[in-house]
Image (cartoon, rainbow, N blue to C red; front, side, top):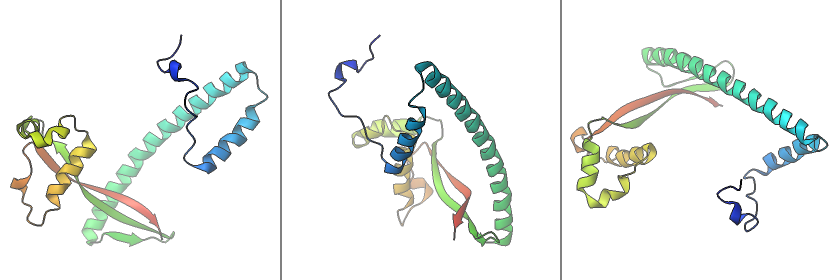
Length: 165
């Protein structure tokens, strides 16, 4: 069965890789598989896909550990009244803080957007657009919480990050 875009096949050139080093690695890997039959290629594709799934599961577990460690480090930093520490292993561990914006779930932000035709672009707003919109209010010198559009809720997002020194 033909795909949705089949009629356009051959009318455009193949999208290039953004990173030429990645393209070189793909070429080298492709050379390693070039002599294999379709059956063997399918086997290797399936095997690599399972490996990727397992690694993604490991990454999810590591993210849990990193979050737990970060919360404990944040508590220590706050108790010491510091924002960063130079480690013995040559890195700087620091607190990265920025506002995060959410919808308070009351529907008031939707009503606010509908009431102002100039905000029509926010009707199908994604989280990043809403965050950028709200940060505009937060960056005003005379900002007070009552100036924030109704229905938006601001949180502080504090993350522990590591920087090479």
